[in-house]
Structures are given as C-alpha cells and as structure tokens.
Length: 148
Image (tube, rainbow, N blue to C red; front, side, top):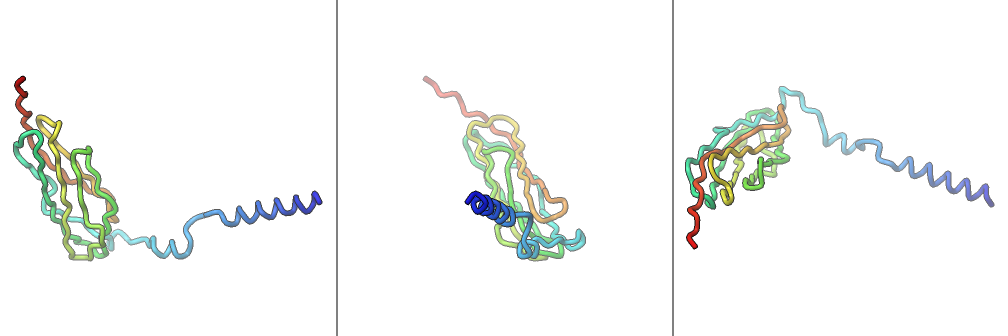
C-alpha cells in the first residue's frame, strides 16, 4: 500500500513539473518576432515640447502632439506615462502602419501647482530606443488668497 501511495505522489510531482511554464510556447514565439533595427518603426514628432505660457492655478491645459511612423514596420505604443499624476496622456492603442500618423494628447491639471512647471511624458513603443520623451511647460500663477 505504501509503495502505491509513494508511486502516486511521485507521479503527480513529475506531472506537475512537466506542466510548469518554462518559456514561450511556439505560438508565443511567433508573436514576439525580432525586428532588425533597420526595419523598426520610427516615432517622429512634429514638436516634442509645448510651452503653454502662463495660466491661473486650477486651469487645465490640453495639447496634442502629432507624430508620424517613419519606419518600415507597424508602430505599437504600449504605454505613455507622465512625470506626475497632474498630467494625463492618451495614446493610440491600434498599430500605426509605416507612413501613418497619430496623436498623443496630454492634459495638465494645474490645481495645487504654482510657479514654473515642466511635465514629461515618456512613450514606450517598439522603436529603438524604446522610450521617447515629450513635454509641456509653463508658469502657473497662484490663486489669490481668499478673504475671510
């Protein structure tokens, strides 16, 4: 009886090891093809810095950054993240073909901000280098103090 139990435990152990994920499957490997640098997408912005001038504290500024894929394969933007929570980027989720155009939109909320502001947005894409940076900057005038 003990031999049967021991055999069963070992069988389950060996089967569980065989089912562990040891890397990408053939199907996953197909989807993660390596693109030579000369064939990669190329993310080119018209302007990477937007100067919004002077605004009052509490106002929002929204700006669109047009870009073109000047590479030889589809551009896939996987993320766009801002340097702080006061700036929210929006980016296209669908692939941008070679020669295709798109826009990254950023909204800066100046509530609680005063003085000179420089907010960075870092775009992660299947380009080389993988990270591209755009920014917006300007001055925020503080709210007048409320009178009691």
